[in-house]
Image (tube, rainbow, N blue to C red):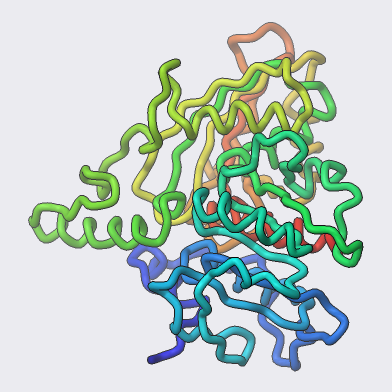
Length: 377
């Protein structure tokens, strides 16, 4: 069987063949990598054959994350596949209760049910689990962390202290939103936030990305589109997010943004409302964010704050009508912010509108998880 590399997923899609700006990830050096170290932690990647699992490997390599060993874990169906990572070939192992013996850090992205079953088992064996699912995000005592926003939430959790732990990765739309909103919140305190999201196929996994590409070909060729993932045409269309609609009329994705923002900001009083839409974009989300502040904040000060915020870049050229786009941030680490302007519906400088784009697989998932793991060292 041919080795499956963590680059295959990126390069196999129609829209990724379009010209895109150069990634701001560190270039792959020609020197021998120093990631493999005897005194470094042992790693496991759970769900390694999925979209986020493959991106975990990409980010680990890009950031030279130190490790002494790494396990590639997935379902029984994927067991036996070979994965090339940093000039080594690995065989994917079936995930079992014994998979975490001797593992210091496990990066999980295999769905909530797998996390609920195997996350606590890993913790019992002394493993620190960084979980990308929604399984534990709202559990009291489980830190919900964006490293640039609230690293203090995981204080005291470190590799080498002999204790396992669970740390939750927030939802992708929450991460991308709060990377931009938090620096402004620290300055003038957000009292109300209205978010509209335009979410990419990658948020629904690799199969959704493949179906979007397939549908695009089919529609352009005049054929009926294959609709297995979303049960409707996705190409050249958009629709309300495919998560379940709750009795209050919000869907689960929208309520994640509401609840997770309150937990991450440690502010149960902040008012948040969201509308989440699925759009035919491959791997980067866009979000329109309206902010109401307790204290005035003019747009020039906001630009200066965002200019100095870690993990944020400003693309806000009114003269050229150039603002963030999903394509521009695809395969990049930073979240891009633009359309920074005073909200004319509010008196004075107590409101701002911004537009935010970020790579859903990278900062919205894998990069954030690896950054959390870096704080464990």
